[in-house]
Length: 548
Image (cartoon, rainbow, N blue to C red; front, side):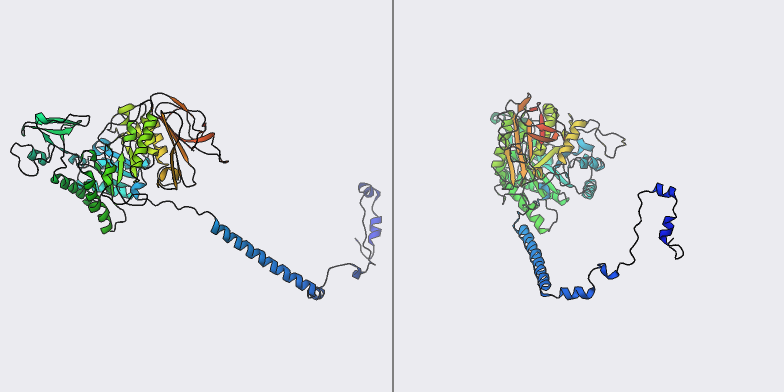
């Protein structure tokens, strides 16, 4: 095509008529070879560009753009710095002592798993409850095992980052103890004679639900004993030897390297404040400092009556991160199955918190007493959940988490599950417990609103006025994190309340929220993750619900 012998126009002219008909619209425009090359614009040459760029007006333009660029860049940098400096700073999360930020699982060694070795075997179960601290009772009983078995249990717990505490009853002593044998003689002499509380037949104080008088023929007098067990004689702390005995008990347990002890029941100890102060300063505070311990010791104090006076000899307020004893109460859990249970629970919590700023611990079933299901099986699930979400340290009694009537666990001989579960467990109640405890401990599901009770401007804990005395409702919030709303009906009949009231949850516009998501519930028609209308909440008897 286009050869010198046959120009292109000739070739195109030779195309057949058939081809022309197939392409009637195709036209070929031929380059005009006579068009002069210099008439086509191909841009400025390098020399021309350099000549123009050196002209004064372009030099000034470049300088203006250069200066403007850096001014804008520096302005943005300064603006960003000012935003960072002047923006509201995030409040750092508190760094509490380990015993102020934990779920405590209370278990009697013989009832839970027969002995220390059995407890070690079933530690995965306790771990599944998100309980990071185990408080064991009956540890001094020879049937629980040897000191080596106890140390093996503690070592196994340390590998799971768990802490071991021991329950130390200091108000009573077994009548089989040598102290009682020495005291229960007619010819008794020395400081053991009044180590226990003795009274002649004619001078017996009226009994109540906590104690009884038991006659001892060897001494010819009556001794004050526990109402539940005549073989537990009350100690007379008016005797100097009694305080020495309690101090030695605590010293011996800490010598076994346990992480903490709980003294029980201080309601029956005369001048408990002095005893607590001596134990705290000698075996907890000062011992921790002298040993430069990385894990401080813990001291829990349980009293069946008002225990605020027990701390008069202990310095500080024991706010978060400050070392100090933890006071344990079960008072709110005793106000159930009454028409005004909600108001009584609110009054009990308010009174307890108003007497001391110290970290509190709440238990629904004190050690030595009956389980929730035995006391009132209707309210047990809701009361257990309520105790877990109160501000402070939740204490979970072994057996309450599974809805058991008996504190003795029935373990399967074999299981295909990763974690063995007691055969006498209520699956729904166990799930509710786990759903609640996971929100209380450090982790990706933890809610700061439930974890921290700093008792300052960063913490909100307010009761809601629902106009219904059968229901207790409160909101918990830490700084600007999402708040949690709790409503609990411990009265004997169903209640319908509005939680869309002053002090309640707010929507994104700052108005009272009309809907909220269910987090955990112990009963009723509530389902986790489902939106609940707050203007009309139906709470069956014994039901507690968490909303956000």
